[in-house]
Amino acid sequence: MGGQRWRGAGPGGGRGRPARYCSRSCQAKAYRRRRQTPAPAAERPAATGTRMRKRRQIAEALWRIAAERGLHAASLREVAAEAGVSLRTVQYHFESKHQLLVAALHMLHEENERIARSRIDHDPADPRALLRAVLEEFLPVDDQRATALRVFAAYYARSLTDPALAEVFLSGDQPLERLVADLIAAAQAGGRTAPGLDPWREADLLVSGTVGLGGDVLHQRRTLEDVRRTLDYHLDKIFAGDRGAQP
Image 1 (cartoon, rainbow, N blue to C red):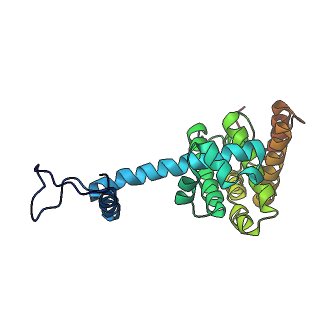
Image 2 (cartoon, helix red, strand yellow; image 1 turned 180 degrees about the vertical axis):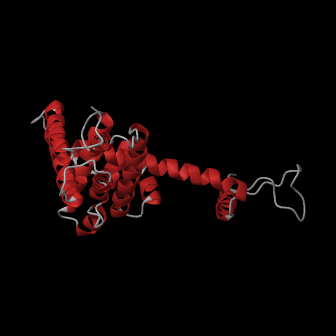
Image 3 (cartoon, one colour; image 1 turned 30 degrees about the vertical axis):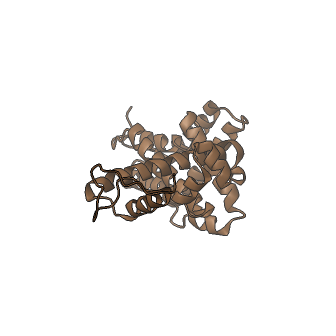
């Protein structure tokens, strides 16, 4: 009986009109037609928002696995299980593991930048404090920054054996170093630094040193207080003779 078309006398029945009830095959065809019909324009933004939230949910699952077990453990199946979705859902939103790794990396950068901007008070009258606040973003000061540092370490390890990922992860323009170099150069132009500095070289050492020291904190080889003292030591050298410093 389930495979038979019913032609009841209710609305929609009768000659020249489609039957109100139909077989499973008929229902499947109707479902496919609805799936193929473009959604009304008013519904598309909501669908896009849902898609973005689902992609973010999957990316966050990848971050957690990377921070706890490394990217080698982040198979698509493991990511799906961590995200609480099906493997097919992960594959729908990301065509390959490489695409997922790259998208999740970009999302993490955006998230860190958004949070950092909300935390850092921009005080142009105190370039040393501003630079120190920027460097603090590279340290595991709280759970959010500790997790981000672990995830970036996992990406770095993976990039050593994954050339395609290395091209994305090891950005040629070195944005972090450039940001720190620009801050030092601006302070230098205002007579706030020691003479004869090369802002780019100073930035290179500060960024690599801070990230490395942050890793030592994660490994509990150093304390956060000790690392901060090391940063202050180097910042004191950079801003030695600051004519604009407050007494």
